[in-house]
Image (cartoon, rainbow, N blue to C red; front, side):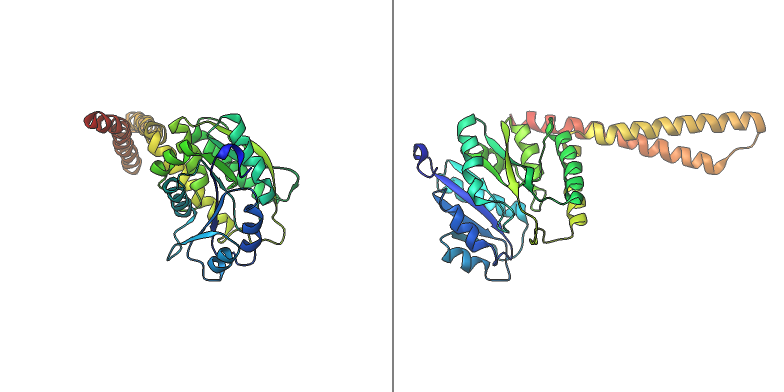
Length: 301
């Protein structure tokens, strides 16, 4: 794998307080790539020193910035040093470095731009509650991606140089939403994506540095924001239209009640007015946000 077609390969391993596992991960990964790069995201333990002793190049952030920031740092290093392929895997022992040839080899052979690891099979130890959360995020990412993604949150994936160049310019998120953002932006850029079955280890691992529920909500909220940014009419226009429609129907009902009883329902009228005003403003906002990017694009041409 390392000498295949004289293509230069880089393994990018994001790390934050992984001193107990990073040494063995680096040693195993070195067998399959030209260079192992560990991007230390402000660890408080001995992670960077152990990674260096194991033979990795280490770039350290002065403070914790999030996985998205780590990926961008690694991508910039890969471009600056002219690597043809980048494979990313976690430093906590969740991913098996011996499967690097599987993921990387798939990308080299299929002509696609990105290969995503698909955590699947009897050797994958994902807890049931994680599977439920993963499925929710898969559907949300697929909605923004334009096609169904089976495992949108797996960090074990490979990129060719074209994908690295294009994504480095487009990625904005700094946190754990980076996996979903990569796929959504890849779809926008027209990059081809494939999936390859991998195993995954969860038992006896601290695989998350934050509360899983908060992690899931933060990723989901960022995905929704990304989709809303791309489809303002869908996320702002349609709800606003429903509010206008509800306010109109409610207002007609108030007038009918007044004609029958000569009693004007002031609180109901105020509520109907609020729906009409907010809905109308939302409709205008959705239309403006939908048209504005095209106007800006044309002005730059």
